[in-house]
Image 1 (cartoon, helix red, strand yellow):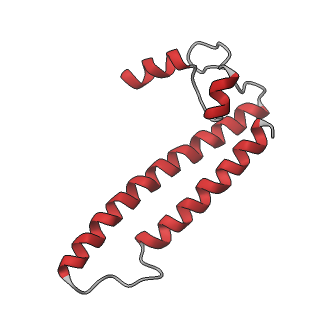
Image 2 (spheres, one colour):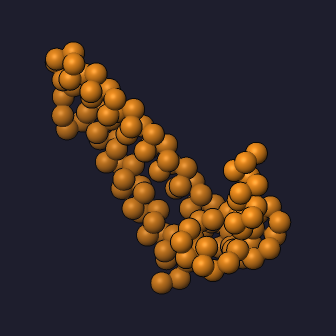
Length: 109
């Protein structure tokens, strides 16, 4: 499987995950609990689901950007230093924007 196919499949999975989270957080299939204690637990669960949804949104955005880089023939180049991102890294994180060294710098900023 090439990177484009892998990214399209990952995007499909994360989109499906986001749809499921949306159904859960908006209680489309299950009513909000009437008991206050249960509402508190349900609210805590919703907070976790919102965090997961935010992560999924971020990854979908990174995947979309990676797909654009494939179309622009710049996929696999670090956005910070311009060097080639190692295939080993792209196999693990096909939507990676940065080489490992630059990713560490960006995360620490």
